[in-house]
Length: 70
Image (cartoon, rainbow, N blue to C red; front, side):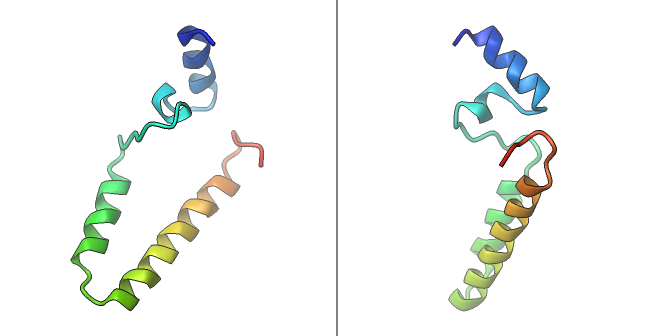
């Protein structure tokens, strides 16, 4: 696939070509902030609960994104 085609698909999906290629793209800082919060929690059971909540939030965002066909 040409880079221009990938860029066009990314534009339609309102994302970046790096995201479509599987590269981390943390423009909004959400992942960095979530990771920072998880690192600050010392209790392993609380950390696991928070991680599950973050994963559920991400899944919910994917399910309701009109540009992703699941």
